[in-house]
Length: 184
Image (tube, rainbow, N blue to C red; front, side, top):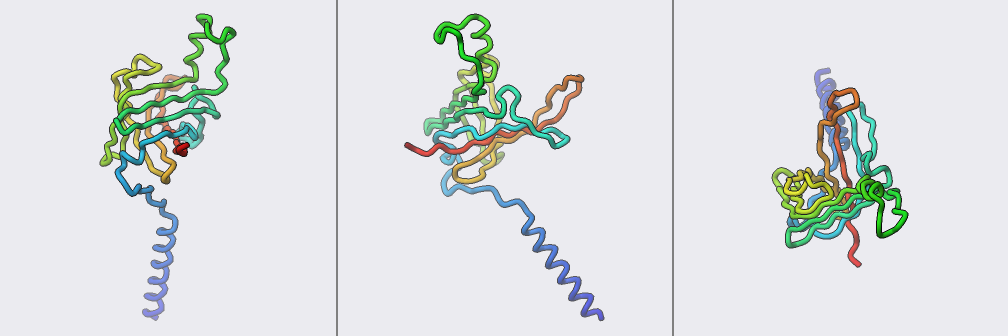
């Protein structure tokens, strides 16, 4: 009888271990070369997402569900990012906007360029804007924790406390997903 109990216990442990092994998340993609080299090139925005504590998600409110954008990293250590809501209204006179049109042009548009640094141990990309749509970003450090999905896809993901309409602060998780553009 002890042998049967021992056998059944061993079988149960084996099944449990196998189930845990198959349900574990797959390991992150590891490029063959240097991590910094992985990022070099042009990337197209796939999506933006805010995840709230209750589990619901939304795209970035200022960019909307159909946001478009590009991210460039050069061998010289420079980078440029542009993200845009495609439904921004056009100016009545294409070259000379009214004051109201010029002010609204920034709604749904984020852009900055500068230098970058990859911190492999922290799995973090640091962007240092030298030009930006927001004057407050010039000279700042924009920290982007990265996650490599495949040779041609990665995402940045982090957490921020966001002020709510009722005056409380909520911790949200933000994600920006990028896909490599093929060379032409």
